[in-house]
Length: 379
Image 1: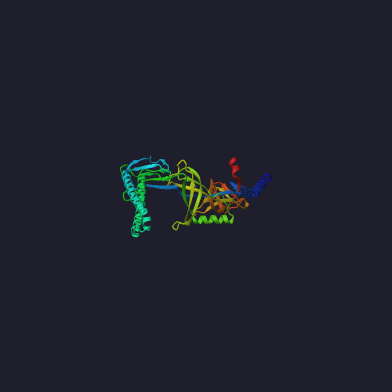
Image 2: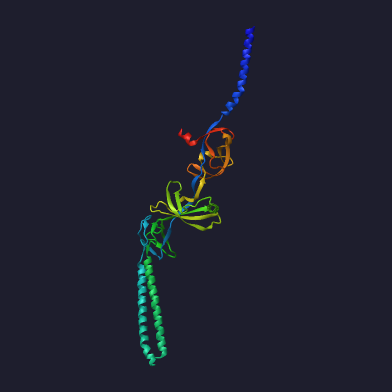
């Protein structure tokens, strides 16, 4: 009887001991339920800002080769798509009619010069006779008028000869500028210049070459105000980079000018850049993306792209390690992309720990154990 009572007392004491230990261990396990996350500590750094703007390649100069006289094309003396120099012969129009016209003009000039010579001799002969009244004053005045008329006829004949020589020269069509010539728009045997100046070919100067691009007037004003307030530091605003759309081809150039007017329909300002094009890679009409410097932000904050999440409302958010090592969601405003990082314009400060790697299901308010992302990557 005594042994049974003692056994019951022992079992009761053990049950009470177990009951006392259970509640004490439960808070300890809850405190240890923290989620390991990878974080980066934000440090302000210098960032050169740039804008990518759409643009079109334009030739430096364009010359339309036109027939300046009417005639039949006898020869085409260039290779289509080749480079030509100013003064190179492109077409030969039949010169025979113009040679005949020149000979006729020269003959008319010779006749006028003969009449002028005769009139000069008469006036020279009448000059001393009119003083002694051997010749009437009326005859002398008539001889003088005849001389002046002959002189005018000579000048008109000289102009006709010059015109005939010009037309003969225009029969040989030459390149007005150096550049690359396109396809021939007139062929041998074609009648050109009849009634209008027929377009025969087009020459475009491709080295150097222009790129025209546009920028929003509002963006230009914001940039100017940021530079004025000191939020951005001025840089080399003359340096440009053009990339052909759909390719990796890039070329460096310089900004030439900004238009002085804003397009009333689009609110855009037109800018022009100049690029070297000795190899002829950039062709007129190409669509390019122009990267132009906008200044330097010396206190820029950059976070990895994977740390930025966008909700259904389009608002950007990041998770940070908040007070008490608890996950905290913050709304941010992003700027430009630099490689695989976003510039954060609003919402974060230097020293904040941004979560870039976290387990699935992490929500604001959950306790976390931060580890530097670079250390985790190294491990």
